[in-house]
Image (cartoon, rainbow, N blue to C red; front, side, top):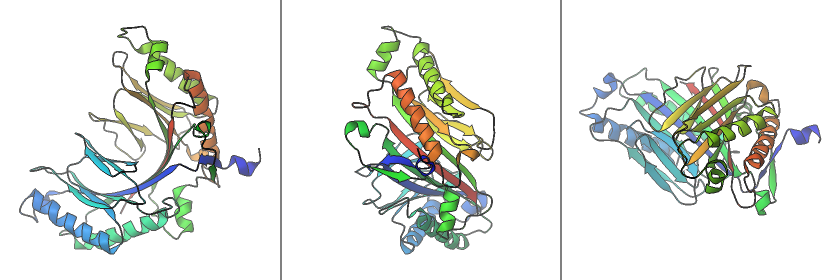
Length: 355
């Protein structure tokens, strides 16, 4: 295989792309003191934000003042669901536009979180332009806030999602991606980032624990699920080791994994979310496993994180080829049927910084 071919990963044409940017502003006593009550504060600021969004052609914007975590996924129809700790946004960037304030009566928010969902076509190609427009909005917003010296934490989330076995189901057409890092991509499109940027690139796969999988590894009326979880863990670690992938996690405790850079982020797990942290600069192996032998869950979540050296001048293409090879070996080991079962791979690129 030629070097240029190795530096690209060939992803099904049907792959979905998403991008969203969050801006977090700490809600201080001084800020709240400028308004009669919490709700007046949230409503006034959300109207200001929505007006600025219109001016900057940002068409899907939400303000969260109940401290719930936004989770964004592609869907052909627009849905929004709230759980105790999360707000799940399902939407199609090509068609769906919205403005919403999510608040809770008499609740004092720790943060005011603005969520900007990318809209239009060619989301990945236009990601720098979207980032620029969000930054321009924030630059205009801060002087209009009732107090000065407020800090904003910006997080840019991008992901590509696709079925690893699309080809086995007849979807033959692919597109070659180099998967360049966000920094070089943005710089090439004249979107300058500050120096204090934290970045993280990783792949996630969620594996439903199917009836077939459970029946093959567990006796009837089992109450100890160790054989199932240990088999999955062993197969996953073996497949990853064969491709020199060393930053790994298996989460099968019923919680949603949230991946962060452990060097820069405080890791606080909650009732619904399992925070997992990795240092992409560290050279030693990093393995996180969270499962309970007496708790049978619906799905196991697997994460493979890229290290600093996994990104060459071309991008993460070589890393992603190794990930795909490992995941296919893992799937074969545990008996996934490529023609009948989906294994949805999500390639994530995140950056964050404070302004």
